[in-house]
Structure formats: structure tokens, C-alpha cells
Image 1: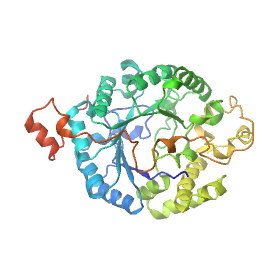
Image 2: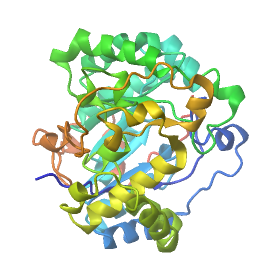
Image 3: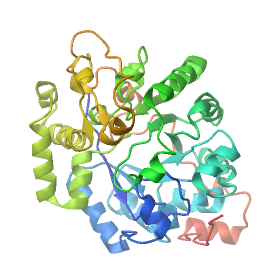
Image 4: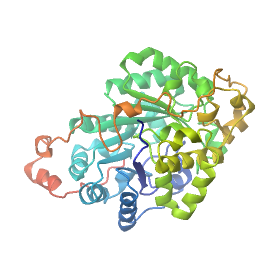
Length: 403
């Protein structure tokens, strides 16, 4: 039986050492204002709240969480004091190019890293991050993560600058032995709404879909777990099983419990109001109700996001996936319309997780069996004994590493 995700995000603030144009918090990153930084105390309170809500996995995010000097402390608090089973980090990998810094995070309790890899080469990736050598840094960081036995996942935001190179990006990530590969369609939410920015970032779903299919066909036999997020099913005909959008995320252990995450950030009143609005509009209510109240709340919040940001067109209503799809963003519709949408014919699908294999990869709260913690003392041959002792017994390796 499927189980709903038991993971939440802890967003430590919007400060970042890169300036990706598709960032959700682009304005805050560029202007360095409204960085919404949590204090160490506030972050620990959010972690404690997550524990009380029955969450089993934590994903630290930002901005760029590795800019925080207290990141090792927060990882250790979550893992060793509160007992969360899996601690994850989303990062651009710049600071993790230093192996001793990775070692400090592993010693604190880190299990899993989600790297943001946006290009197949230095020119493309560095152009998008606006940081020279960031491609080289993240490639080194992935190697360090593997050396410590960490699980490695990747996000690639599909945009104008990289969509024609998705086959090359997929090849790169397979060669780097990524355990999960995610292609994420750019979506204009929060601060990623500036039209002067998004007109140079947005890519037509039809054009991107053709390139994604080309990449899958080229390397499907070699693919690890792979999914495409925020892409309507109709743009990947024949490959719909790879689509993982809001409704599917409820049952993906690598995605967030949107209800719990929202409640931790915004408080119970706002969370319940939004969730109840979403529950009232779940098209597959009979299916989700079988999985219990918590799964219903998670699905309700996910459906609230769909209702808030997206439009269901007349063509959507003709599609077999109408009840389990995200549809298209209002901003996307304003630019591209729905002319290139071709509804997929057939009986209406009422199971949002009909195609999901994420549940076969692992269960919530458990990593796949091949992952295990590698002893720090056996994996630091490149530093002297004094530095090794500092890492193992509390060092945070907090020196700057911004370029």
C-alpha cells in the first residue's frame, strides 16, 4: 500500500551566493533585502514542531543553506537530538566543493543531498548561476558526496538556456552516478514573476517536452529514478509515467508534505483554511480518503496550490489525466495559451499515483538499502590529524567559499 510522504522543508532564508534567474526568491537574492533568515533558535523551533507533527525527514533549503555557519549544528540537532531518520540538503554545491566541509556535514548527520545542476558544461551552468567556476564546484561536490556514501539527487530547472541540452545533461548525471534525476519546469511563483526576467527563462512546454522525450529515449535503459515536475501529462505522450506533479508528490517520499511544511511556516489557522479549501476541490477524493486523514491533508494543500496558481483549460477537461494533473500556470497561459496542448484520450484516471515507482525506491523514513554512513576517520586522508579531529568532534569548517 502506498504511504504519503513524511518529509518537510526547513527554509533557513533566501540569502544565496548565486543569482539564478528562475529562482523563486530572485528579488531577495539580487537586492539582498527581505532575506527572511531564520535565527538558530527559530530553526530549532520549526524542527521541534515538525517532530510533533510526526515528520520523519528534514530537508534544509533556502536560498543557499550552506551559507549558514550553524548548518552543522542544525543538522546535528535534527538528527541526534530530535531523532529524524533522514536529513537532506538542497544546495548549489559551491561550498561543498571543499571536502572537509562536506565531512563536517556528514559527521553532523547529513544523509542525502539534492544538487542543483542546470547545465551540461561550465558555460551553460555558470551562465545560469552567474558564478564563475560553479559548474566545476558542483561536479567536485557530487564526487565528495559519493565518497562519503551520501545519496545524491539532482534538480535541473528546464529553461531557455538549457532545454536544448537536456540529453547531454541527462548523460552527465548518469555518468556522475546520480541516484535520482529531476527535470523541473520553470514555474513563475513567489518572486519569479518579473516579466523582464521570465521572458528570457520560460520555455514552451511543447518544445521542452520534445527534448525531454529525446533524452529519455536516448538513455532510458540507464536511467536511475527519474521524474519531470510541473509539466502537464499531455506534453509527454507515451512517457506520462515520468510526470510527478503536485498530486503525485503526496506519495513521493522525496517530496515534501505540503500541509506540514505550510503549517510550520504559516501557522495552523492559515494551514487549515487553505487545506480545507483544497480538500473540497480534490477530484480523486474517494481514492485519497483510503490513505487516512494526514494523506488527505497533504493532498488538500497540494490541490490548493493547483487552484491558486493554475488554470484548467477546455482542452484539459477533454484529457484522461484531468483529475490528477496540475494543468498550466496562469502566467504560462498568458504567454503561450493552450494551442499546443493535445488532450490524451481515454478513461478518466482517478488515482494520482497510478504510475508512481517512487514508492518502490524507498519508504518514507528509510533510505534505499545501499546507502550507509561511511566512517569519517576512514574518509579524510587528505587532511592532517588535527583538522580531522576538529571535524569529527565539532568543527564547522565555516570559512567563506563564495566563488
